[in-house]
Length: 502
Image (cartoon, rainbow, N blue to C red; front, side, top):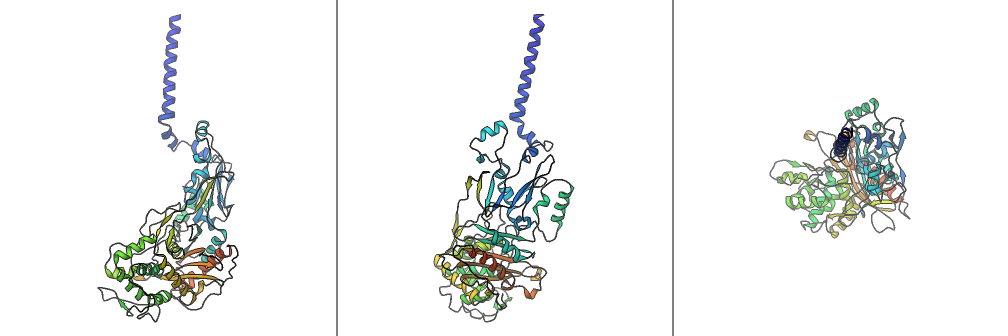
């Protein structure tokens, strides 16, 4: 009898060892595989078992959570969803996350180890700390001014604080409501299909992910290259440029939209947006000089994050002289995101120095204690300080007496540059209207805001499209909102100018 008990004990011991081995294998070897198995819903159930942390604008949440009563309990909600969609992105139980919702997902979902001082304890107990929050750099007043100014037209607005790189406004139009994608079920699938099939592409973040020919706004880069390389030593001196200017190595004349450009100085060419002068100057700077100048401003950089990735702005590194002439006025293959052109304006405003733009000021715990803060980084110096000072003067003339009068703000110093970018086969597409600018409030030492506006406006009359008429009023509204928020500064709105401009 004892022998049978002994064999039974041996058998039980073998089974216990096998059970322990199998359990260890599941927990230590196959845990990641099983957790990632689409059939395993435990992770999703746990992820949505509690409310998600919020994204904050001006200290107030623009997101929330709703108890759906389903297995995936809490769904994302959005306050003013279309207004902030380019900032927040979406957090969908079906389609994942995007933009800040994606970049700060660990904090917002409560899975970031930095949310607790004892992360190992939470791993052992399988309990998550309370979800944290993402504090953005966006200012509600600027965001609203930009969104209202675009009024549903296709385009984008980016506003930066030149001294820090903070993104104060990030608007893409037309937009969408991320709440439509939050949950599960056929309604969410239909919304996803509809939004992706929409020819207006409302889910495209035009401010960060779309690149456009920058047109005449790129002339600021060309002017900086010429001054830094001393190809132009006196911006007020005649340039001996014919009108029209025949592109080098071709019989193709390059015309101007403005009059009085023959033999104009570089200062006049910026003020009245003379294509011929700036194209000729770009050729004189040369391919290498123009490429180096463009890259100092951030062109050809595919690694920019804000923290979401940003499309690479392009300036070709291998061109013939006629192509270089066109590229120097923002045409040919030159393409830029609105963020990139806001960086150009900010570099001028900040004495030639570019700060790395960023959108998230801090990630915090649920009670507001910071988990981490954004670190300010210089990208590089885009131009010499003396060049930046001269360009500030030239850009002020554009607004005071030139093509950008619709950007003027009483009681403030404003510098800008208009642009009308041709595109499409044979330039047959409706031109894009651009305006880049910076503004400094009275009694403040440095410019407080730099902005870039692009309006696609495919429904408009081709003759009505210009940076001054379509884009400058939007920039003015955004800059006025920024300056009004500064202590002691109350700039009044300006009446729009009447001079038709390029």
